[in-house]
Figure 1 (cartoon, helix red, strand yellow):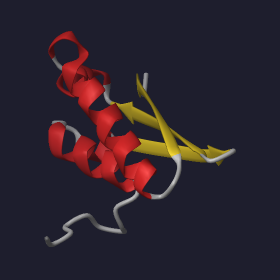
Figure 2: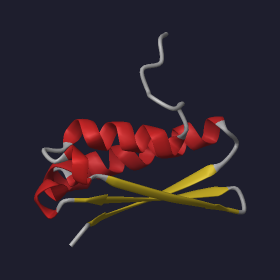
Figure 3: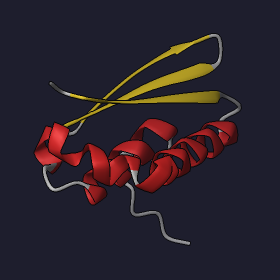
Figure 4: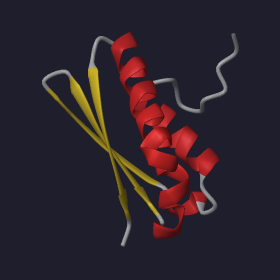
Amino acid sequence: MQDNLPGGTGPVELVRYLAVSLVDNPDKVEVLSSEQDGTVFIRLRLDPSDMGRVIGKGGRMAQALRTLARASARKEGKRAVLEISDIG
């Protein structure tokens, strides 16, 4: 299986890749991260007009992003917490 994610396959890179693919304003996507006690905290900040695309109906897309981030972190023996907010 070929890996098309630039910069690796960690949870931060995965969230960035997916968010940029989903939104209308990819240049306004910000992904901030920090790590503490084996947990990667990821903050995804978006243009307010893109919030609906990333959150999805009933929050399904946001939940899917969180699930993928957790699965990616688990491969590295870590936990992941994803927070989604607008830049405004």
